[in-house]
Length: 225
Image 1 (cartoon, one colour):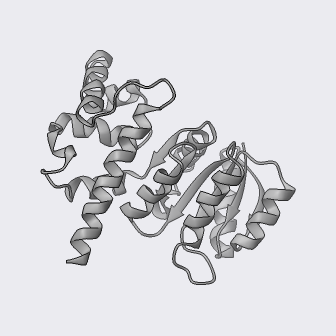
Image 2 (tube, one colour):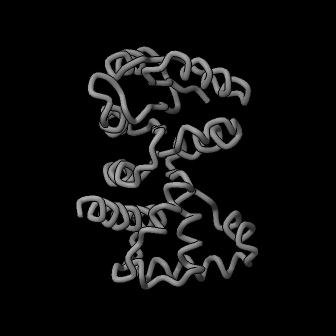
């Protein structure tokens, strides 16, 4: 596993590089802004890029915009966005642009080196990862009148774990359910969200994306009131 880190904080970059090295992830390059990131991606073959969501010069969403562009330019490359802020709208925007090969985690969770490597492996293999705190915030702020209001509490638990990138077996272990029961819950979630079978679509990712988009819109609406 080879990665490039893009963050304006030299201290954070060095610390993250040491942490990743301890779990066998090679940091091929480090960049302090998006301009340097493009240069490093052109010079190194890597499996994934790690970006801070807020980068110079305005420290708003440069990192997020760059992550989306990285997926467009390098579709085989996994992208993991790190943020100090639990912004469901940012996560939804990232997944909306590229529902595969992307992840959004909070920086205070990266001290778990094994979990970080696991997240990198998921995005590098085309999966999607969303921080559980963001998942929890969106669930708390849900509106029952939305499509998600059709889901039972157990189905929402299953969808939350799907958003974290868990496999059916991992969901079953976490919720103390049988695998067949989990499969039934997932089927119910997909049906209630109106996701009909389609060979070219990853319905699990689309379910998570539907949920994040709806809840992100609710959060923004509440803030604008």
